[in-house]
Length: 468
Ligand code: NAD
Image 1 (cartoon, rainbow, N blue to C red):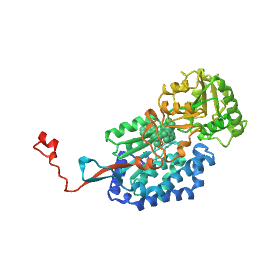
Image 2 (tube, rainbow, N blue to C red; image 1 turned 120 degrees about the vertical axis):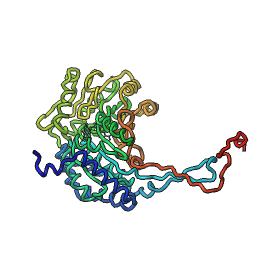
Image 3 (cartoon, rainbow, N blue to C red; image 1 turned 90 degrees about the horizontal axis):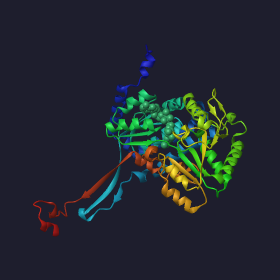
Image 4 (cartoon, helix red, strand yellow; image 1 turned 90 degrees about the vertical axis):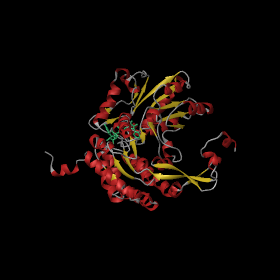
């Protein structure tokens, strides 16, 4: 039998329903709509990050052995940058936008009014637990909504720290945190929300979309996929490999949504590429990367088992040209490069989401486009080349959530471009003003007066009226 303490913390359908109603009342009061409320919440997020930088880095160390620099740069600085931009631009974003009218409505004026959607649900993932929870929350706050955040149970230290800190820093009547796993998320998903913003894998993305459909709730699905890197021969190989390494292993040891999933190159380039990767990997992580403090561990034993299964696949195991070491007790897998893996092996059937990097060879670099386009649309696609024509062809013919030429993952840091997937890598987008828009209804407003009341609109309809 559950103890009194346990009974108090059960979050079931009734609790979810009550929470939803409570937030609806708060939203109806108009509190979250004011410019002042939004600004004060955004400032508080920055203050929370500054006051608790060490606690946050410590939680990330517990959940993922995330190196402190990665925590500060990729979780905290990026989050604070989002807040700073929103603080600077919010007045402008909130302003109604003048719109052109047509002859049909003459005389008239029109505008687009940015209206908060209402009460929104944010469900986030474990790999960047602070950023992926709080960055969408910045958008929801900037847009003037009330909200529930459901962080991932797979990063428990981060989840419980957010559950403790958010009520201390933010308006706890309008911003709620619900901790939990499948049953708590399912209870939340039964409720009617005005938007659901989900970050995670596509299997659960389908569950979220199905639940949202019952209430005709719009969704943003920030999913993943197999993000390819195409490497041409005419490049500065050292710079390219350093960028590939930091984008793959330097971002949570490959456990990042826009992490390079596989490389495609030509035969003449492969040897040079592998040599350079090996050399730079050793420079960054030493001769025994399992002991490097600059690499995150694998999040838990089931993800460790999933990744080792990919490595132990008969078609893959003999193809390791670098790495392959693992330490089950400490959930560590070394950066691993594979060459000559058949395309029909297990590793190419799912998103790798870990430190394994297969390299595929094509006869000519343009063949990589077909290889990419024959799979599901990735969240990101990367190309290293100096060839202008190839860059243009890549941008025009490869479909992906985002494309970066000659670097990895950095589009994430450009707030003037949307971040999101296409097809199976997701729907909708955020970052910068796109975050504000993701949680806003663009309301069309037309102003008319009582002049210009054209007879043609009114019955009896006659041909003659059309010629007037
Ligand atoms: P996860 O296991 O933390 O799951 C995500 C959320 O879904 C969690 O809050 C979890 O509680 C909830 N959930 C899990 N099972 C559920 C169920 N049956 N019903 C309802 N809710 C459920 O994270 P994950 O899915 O392992 O995350 C990794 C995936 O997310 C990868 O595919 C990665 O590419 C993708 N991802 C995408 C982005 C992006 O911005 N596009 C960012 C990070 C991760």
